[in-house]
View (tube, rainbow, N blue to C red):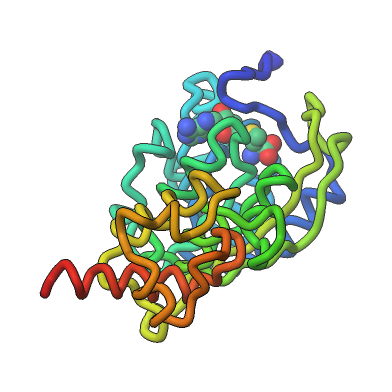
Length: 259
Ligand code: SAM
């Protein structure tokens, strides 16, 4: 029976064998690796991944698709976790995880923030997302794409834009261009925030009104003199600061709060 793609689950299925091969080659799965695919759908990537790995775990929300997957693979090859990836505890799958997927575009940002919480359990992640989101993830300070998503993900991961995938590679075709991105957790030692929740609040405040200067947007957290003492011009806007600058502000505020 054919499956009718569900918009609410962001279902655009990969249908171009060359692109599928290119993505799986970029992932480079090796037998025995601990991999989980988010949103296997009709199995476009699942098939070659299972073939190369021997065993794969998947997280899928659509019950009809799960029923299909169950009939297609023996349990020894595929472990199916039925449910919402946004609420899924990836830490329960162990460590050294490789997480992959052609992610549902309607929940890209929340899923990336959710996954950032499991960086300590992850070896790497390779995802397909809208190109526009990938550009924001990898953007450098000073560019118009640089924002909260860039800072919070670059704080935790080294990221690379691998290649683009055109709409024609999918059924149904999405309206936008897609890209493949690789995310590898960074060692935090040199750039660790003492209080990551505070870092997130400061970054949200700075970019919440990105046309205003830091002296205004960060007033609640830090005054002009302290910003200058950190070597940061209070007259700048959020997009000019590096991830390291944000960590320095957050660590200054955490120290003051403790004193
Ligand atoms: N991997 C398949 C492919 O490349 O053809 C399907 C990709 S499709 C863009 C996204 C997949 O994620 C669908 O199978 C959809 O049902 C699933 N999905 C959507 N929302 C989800 C969620 N919150 N948790 C887990 N899976 C989800």
